[in-house]
Image (tube, rainbow, N blue to C red; front, side, top):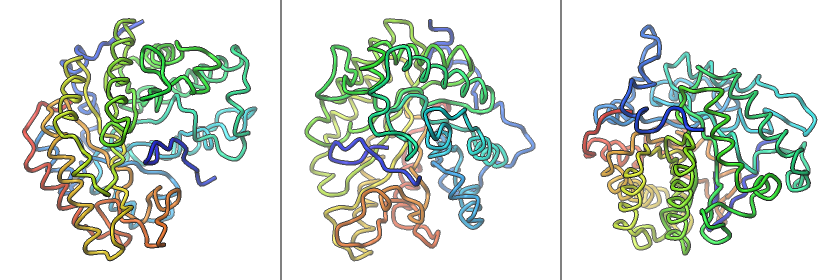
Length: 386
């Protein structure tokens, strides 16, 4: 959920146990779903599934509940649901003193369950998503014990509440950095780092595993594809994974946000370096989830045909590289339709043209991006499913 150009902020609408290698070699967590539920029938889902890949998208109650047409599209096309907003703190804990409110989370998990969609729940550790009920610097102003009680108390209650109902958790989101980092790659400006200390990430993973021992646990971040610090960010993530594994921390998968920028993407994207990065992650025994894929269309002409073609080219190039890695088991768009894209809300185009970053347009019709994603799945090498 990070912006391009290194921006981290997003405005909003208001001990080891089960290791990765053992988990990937055992029974699939997706196979525990009830046989009576109908699987999604969409072409994207089916084409991905044929190659051992799980395709899906983020979703939120404010999108699917008042919009039955979009809910139907989502039920048909998405094979996994990333919780976009409903487990963020502006929903879960709207003020510092508020008890946890699982109302929205329960509703989106129920929606996914009804559609036979496993849930990737997000995010247990993040410095954003607080909403208007929090002072912007509230997390930085906490004492060490206050911060521990707040973060770990919330994680313990939340994971216990949804244990057995979700397939995977994004435990730590945007906790590494290419520049302001410690020796293990962790972002030192993060408020939890400054209040609790550098062990907050490993403690969060251990606590989540204790509360939900059968769930896959992810570390999730952005900026690995292009940008002046992309290479440094890739190195930082590998350092962080190495550190966590040296401490026997139960981290099972890397989440790659894949917020892509169409402006000059083909020129800026070092395909060999990226492919090596994914291979290095896989060599450490982790699965790879592409968690928040979309294409920001800055720098493109406003006319729809050429813009859609350029966005589709980015999807085609990126996925042709990423899907060569067999450890890439999950591909999620950050939203299915341009009707609901965070980019329009948070980073509108300067010329006022509506953003078009996703496979379906505002009228829920497939675009060239849809075709590019579909062909990428069809051309991808097969792999054992997660």
